[in-house]
Image (cartoon, rainbow, N blue to C red; front, side, top):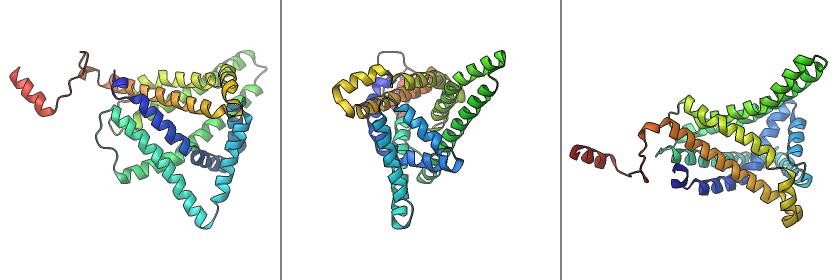
Length: 278
C-alpha cells in the first residue's frame, strides 16, 4: 500500500532518467579512483563482462568515459568538467534522497552544507568501496586457485567466493537504507530490508543480462537493443530499491499503521480534537 500510495513506480522512472544522465561522470570517477589503485583494467574487464552479449555498447560507453577524462585534464575544461561531474552526481543524489524522504514522510531534506559534505564523501568513497571489493574478489580467486589441491579447503573457499557477492550486496543495500533517508533509521530495520533486497539485486544482476532478454530485444531493436535493456535493468533496480525502502519504513513503524482500507490523513490538531471527543 505504501509503494502504491506514494506512486513510487513514477519515482523509479525519474531516477532512471537521472542515472542515465549521471552514468558517464560516475564511471569517470570510478575509473579515476581505480587507476590510482592500479585496478582500472579489472574494472574495464568487469564492464565488458556485463555487456558481453552486446560488446559494441560496452566499447561505446568506455569511449565516452575515455573522452570525458581526456577533456577534463587541464585549464578551463578541467574546471567545467569537474563542475559538470559534481552537478550530475549531486543531482542524482538529491533525487534519491528526496525519494527516500518521501517514503519516510520527511518534509525537510538535509541542509545545503550537509548535502555538500555527504554527497562529496559518497562520490569519492563509493568508487573506493567498489575498487576494494573488486580487489577482494581477485584476492579470493587467487587464494582459491593456490589451494586448489586441498580438497576440503578448496571447497570451502569456492563456497565463500560464491557467497561473497551476495554478502557485499546485502551490506551495500543495508547501508543505503540506513544512511540515505534524512531520518533516524534503526539498523535492524535496515537489515530486514537489506537482506532480501540484496539477494534479489544480485540475482537480478545475473538474470537481466541472460540470453533470453538479449535475443528478444535484439529481434526488435537490432544493434540498438542494449539501450532499452539497460533502461529496463535500471528501472527494475530502482523499483526494487524503493520497495526495500518501504519495507524498512514499515518494519520500523509497524505499530503506527492504520489497518483499514485507507490511512486517515489527519493533521496533529485534528487528531487531538478527535482524541478529546472520544
